[in-house]
Length: 341
Image 1: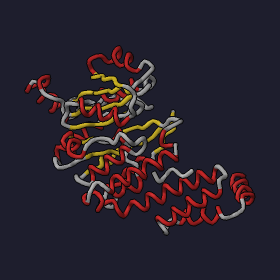
Image 2 (image 1 turned 135 degrees about the vertical axis):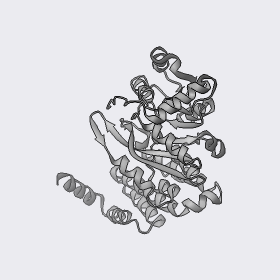
Image 3 (image 1 turned 180 degrees about the vertical axis):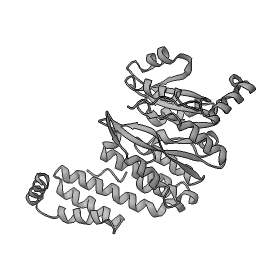
Image 4 (image 1 turned 90 degrees about the vertical axis):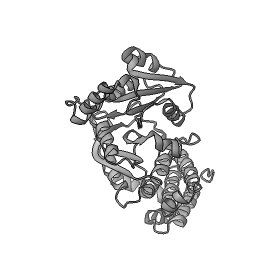
């Protein structure tokens, strides 16, 4: 039924001149009496196995003027007790009933006291100079609304660098919000945003399960300039059962997000409108591929046709639409032959 209409440990290097200067300035002016420069917001749900390493990667930063805000989003494991026993007052811990990552991040933003908000997921890691590089960009260009970095993904000892290339591509044509619409790829743990910008554009949309981060980045980059630190400074852990693997939910949520963004007003719509059909076409192709995998040939045919209507230049959609017209037995024979080769 169509629903779419609706770890590597890194030893911290010596404190840099920037972080040392910031720390000495903080001591001279009474650091305990003033807010931190950066608030690190970490949502956590049943994160006992990984959150210790995530927090350690924050504590190992060369830039040390930060606070750590963890929002325990209804965990039923030992996440909260581990944080209290291992980190104590180094972490500001808040607990709430489970409401999803967006609600937890928004709670963290509401509790944060910093000038800038940096996001980290409970199972991901920062490399030691991540905060320093980003704060320096904001100091050099105060008008920026967002600074991101490149990232790599890992599973055990395997490392995947596609995220690095994709992050760079988002800044290739000068229209960052349109690039995010088409390609996604700006990993949440790579992003730092001024608190003032979040107060202006709002937080994460809590009605979305998938794509809520892209929605916020698009709203920000449509209104403010953004920069990329062209270095891999974040490691994103790949785990089985990720929400992004749910093709139907992804399609529904991203389509809803695109409709909401188009309704944001001319400032946003003008920059993203030409990219929306391309993303819709890609989403419909994904649904067609899923139907084809499940041997639902008639639905697959309709999804591929919808992908073509959105973007007539989608050659992949044309090829698979033609394939979907063949009898099921021929399709299965062709797939078996392809797998054997």
